[in-house]
Length: 575
Image (cartoon, rainbow, N blue to C red; front, side, top):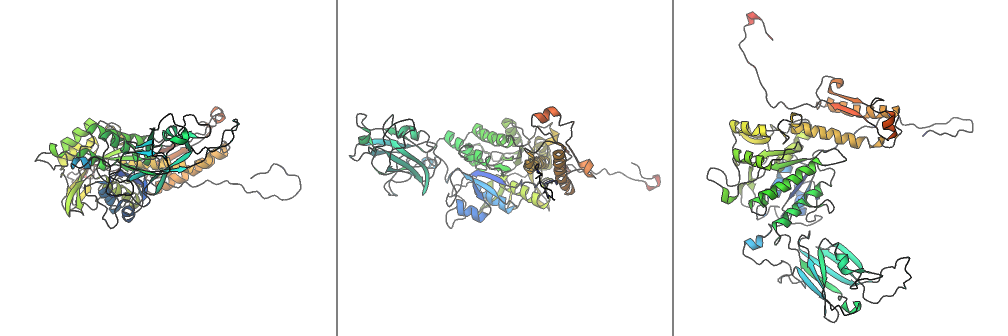
């Protein structure tokens, strides 16, 4: 750092940073999944993203002890996660939406009551509401579980004695504990969810919080006062102890509530929205959205709403550049809609195209694959049909690692599949491919191959037609954003312009040498501009620094055309 105060004669050594800082490319191979699991244990939480780095770790968090991780009701998420890891996927985040289908108990003709017991009795049924009494056994408070409480198992409401809160500084009130104050602690599966202190039954306390107002912010329960209003707050106070409420989120919720839980909230970092709060997640999928539709839990419009949330979340990353992609699946044919001409769980090509036309959502940040794939179900030992999103995303990750993000994730073998729900032929793909539906096809002597690399961009938006181009540009934009944070608040002068230019050029030249940019020289592949023409005195006064970057991404050779003709060597070569 340069000094401005030199008083004594001598030699001064100063360290000055002149070089550029290298840009480290980000990972675009981290996935986010939402769906049903066999269990939720260890460090995992219901509706909250959990980091998973291997199939073994998935079993530790989302499978019962000694289990294979697959569910009795055929959830698609375990198949997607297994396919992700088998095809080269590494790190992913998993959101469990529960361990059984909503309303499953009702469908089986069982009681619609809650599942867990009060007073530590596993055979009795715990209520969705419970009543606390005073020490004299008079009714005091009624606690009820919120319909969309994000929990599994049981909520334990623990009531304990507490002291009054410290009075406000401007109030001359002497501290006096009347015995009316208490605290509530909410626990679930051994974890403390919420704690509320200094509560009182009084409506306008000076040194406490009214219990009704406090629980108004609770995500799990609400309360009603059932005590005699003529009693003093001390006499109304609930007795110390605990009360249990059964979480009915998995057995007695409406489709509307279930849809909200899939969608989730960014504030609570739950559901699909919770994945968007994790910066490293670069691709998202919700395989059990198809199961929810197949079982009648969600209507097709509700399925479209969740898909819209996925695509919009991938498009909206402001102020950062958008860099995520949603991998969508074609909805299945419900059992009562199936015909003998097609598998009961998969649509024909014309049906897939008609559905996409009905969905009517185009975006370069989404990709769609068809048909469903056939994999082995470990529970039955027989093949079963599942959405291809997990396997395809694993292929994306494998291609990134083996060839680079600029390589289209196509003409690749999806591992772990036994067959396809529908064997698309050449003419049928001619119908689907221009509409952005990527086919998985069976080829003689070559096996099953992913035979499509297009996004769901608008059909005339040829700049963003290919998945590899969209992901490469997202990779460059996000890497440059994170790798140039050091420039913020630096003096906006020509020295900074040169350093930023050098930093970005070095990064892009490395990308060009890896084959991701088109051109025989760096000058043909990209340019970086940061000069006085872009950065005028007016913009500099506003604190702005403009850097213009242009790149020429390589595009996949989707159509390889050989022009063959007869050649007469005596006439010489033409062209």
